[in-house]
Image 1 (cartoon, one colour):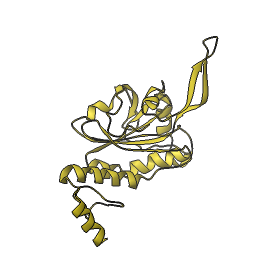
Image 2 (cartoon, rainbow, N blue to C red; image 1 turned 90 degrees about the vertical axis):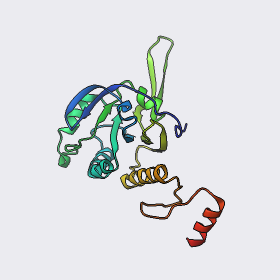
Image 3 (cartoon, rainbow, N blue to C red; image 1 turned 90 degrees about the horizontal axis):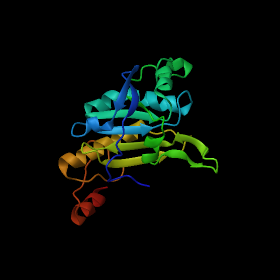
Length: 209
């Protein structure tokens, strides 16, 4: 299911911010009208691919902030698990040094509403909860504009890490389109030529490239 063009699902949940402070009722709604948002899901704390991604986003955090973009992570682990992982040094597989918010989707509802939950559940004849799959999040990433609308969506399987540079490129493309009223062609990067959405301009662009 694509969420592109739709309002980002709203939620309130506990999160760890600034690398160690647990807050209640964290919501992406706080950024509406103020910032673009990169909201990304990862499968699980204390694993292998996940810390490479979280550190990679931290390494480029200043670049996102220069563009007035908030970076927010989320998994189905508890806020206590997030906190413990944040206190663990990088050399020991931890994410110490990560400062952006990490949301605790302990009810699985955020992952479900963003359509990245790996697994389903049902009640058996005794009303016991049965789950198929691990009930963790795929590697979903969403670029949300200042109006709270999802403009870009990417979902990877559990074993496939994402490109933070590509997420940054998509931010640049969206902000360029918003500011200039032009569209960005294939492989566009900041500083490249763009196009107006007319047949003539497209033909001229293709002729040059």
